[in-house]
Image (cartoon, rainbow, N blue to C red; front, side):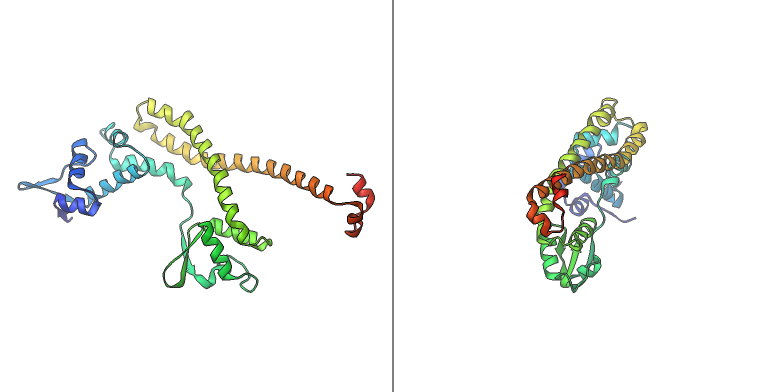
Length: 261
C-alpha cells in the first residue's frame, strides 16, 4: 500500500495540514505510521477523512462525530458512517441518467412527432429535473419526476404548466418530509442520544428509518387520495354551477339531470 506524508494527505483530502493534525488530536483520524522522524499516511487515512468530512457536510458537528467514533472502543468511523448511510439509503433518489438531447421524448415514452423535443427540454430544465451535458446530451437528474412529467404531457398537460407545479409540489412535500423527520427525531432519535448512542441499538435505529419510508408513503398516499376526492367533488360542484340548462341541452345533458343535482 502506497504511503505519503501528511502534506500529501491534506492535499488529497482538500484540507489544511493544521486541520488534519487537529483531527488526529481529537481521535477522529488515527496517527500515521512512523518512518524515521516523519509519520506516513495511507489511503486508509484518506478514506477516514472522507467519512468524517461526509458527516460534516450532512450537518454533524465535530463533537457529534467524535462521539460516534470514540464512544465505543470497538466502533470505527466506518461503522459510524455505516449507520449514517443506512439512515439515508431508503431516501436516496434514483441515479441520474444521460441521453441524447434529441431522444428525450422517445426515452420517456412520448411520441416524438406529437411533442416538441426542444420545448420539452426547455421546460424540464426549468423545473430542475433535467440539465444539459456535454456534446448535445442531457442529464436527467430525477428520472422518476421526468417519467411523471411525461405522463402529464401524455394526458394533454403542456410542459410549460409543469414548471410551477414542480415548485409548488416541492414546497408541500417538503413540509410533509419535515413533519415525519421531526416525528422520528422526537420519538426515536432523541431517546437514542439520551441513552448515549449505544452501538447495540444502531441496527434498530437503521431498521426504523428503513421502515419509516413505506409508512410515510402509505400515510401520504392515503391522505392525498382523500384530499383529491374532496378536491374533485368541489370541482364537480363548480362545473355543475357553470352549466346552465341551455348550455346543458347543448352538451346533451337533460334539464332534469341538472335540476336533480
